[in-house]
Length: 292
Ligand SMILES: NC(=O)c1ccc[n+]([C@@H]2O[C@H](COP(=O)([O-])OP(=O)(O)OC[C@H]3O[C@@H](n4cnc5c(N)ncnc54)[C@H](OP(=O)(O)O)[C@@H]3O)[C@@H](O)[C@H]2O)c1
Image 1 (cartoon, rainbow, N blue to C red):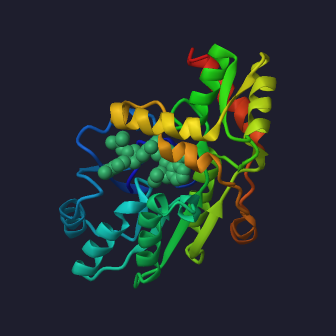
Image 2 (image 1 turned 90 degrees about the vertical axis):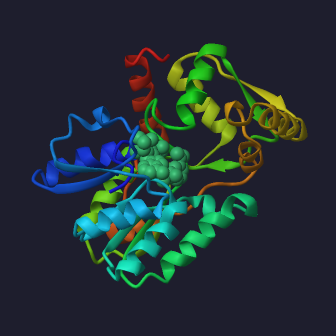
């Protein structure tokens, strides 16, 4: 397994230990990964230090241990490296991979790597299941929504680039973790599934929901789209990794990002919580952590 120390990874492990407490698990972690994050999970871990983007990490691990299933949560772009290692060793374990609905983006510069990885996966000799989440949320460890909530809590406004009418369907990390478990326990589940959340909202509706749940006003501050794009481009050029906003985020904010999860519901009972329930839980966590 990769990504054990991540947001979804830890929630998955917590669910796994309730159904398979004796499960042995080899985790590929980086030398600077914080293992403390999963110290309260009581599974039989064997930690292998490496980097899932590097072939020698995979070759080394796969030569020393025998695996039935690889659960790869770290990054879809690493799939090619994993497949090369498996082909070289002529072993074909079951693969469970987290991808992204970002593969559907019309901006090719952001989706082409994902499309290539998915294409390679389609030609894998073994069986695989690819789960494509939408934007993941759930706690201060998520990449997007906790920052939006904290900003709204502090400043009581939020910039809206363009119309604010584009659609979102964020998925709670715990629902994604539950889907991973269902797939792991049911080897007949194969192929690719989109995993979106229980509610579709426009960006303006999302702000209104955050306003309601925080119990304080959150005013949408309209920013012309081109000005937003120009500012993000400039900030990224000057600040690079430290830029608070990325050009991709502004571009992709204009895209509808709602996707049906009907196939997952039909095949393994996927039933994500509503956004109102998930955000209420996230706000509780942020308050308990003293973040808001
Ligand atoms: N965040 C989103 O909105 C979103 C949307 C769609 C899809 N996804 C995908 O969903 C997956 C899970 O997302 P998440 O937000 O739960 O993850 P996360 O909290 O960002 O955690 C990522 C995990 O992957 C590990 N990792 C990253 N690069 C690695 C490498 N080169 N070698 C070994 N381990 C590596 C990290 O280890 P460390 O502890 O060392 O950092 C961490 O355990 C990711 O593949 C992500 O790309 C995310």
